[in-house]
Length: 117
Image 1 (cartoon, rainbow, N blue to C red):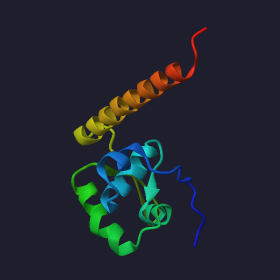
Image 2 (image 1 turned 180 degrees about the horizontal axis):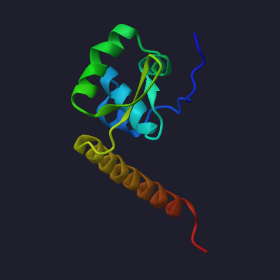
Image 3 (image 1 turned 135 degrees about the vertical axis):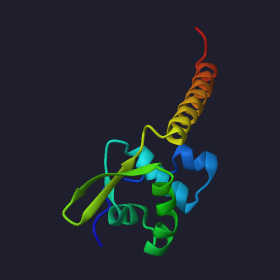
Image 4 (image 1 turned 30 degrees about the vertical axis):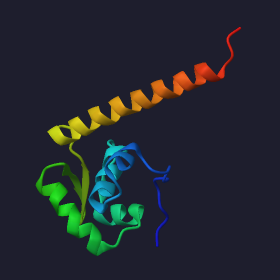
């Protein structure tokens, strides 16, 4: 089996907020790498997902337009997140807002932890 290229940095905010379903994990990989395109086999390898599970959920994302064909290289079709899709835009907004709230809470904790001089 080929080496995984995109290092798993743990649970992402998207998965943490909405759960660890196969469809969400596929979406999460694309959203975490918006400037990259992937073949189906790369996504399967990166996620450590069975082909059967992948194909069960991936076609929904393509049909809905959340993931789109970016280019073809030989017989391989590559896919990328559709940054113009309303759902993707809204998820980005939600993730950014929640990230900001988490950062603000952490900053408050740091202020309380540092004694005033």
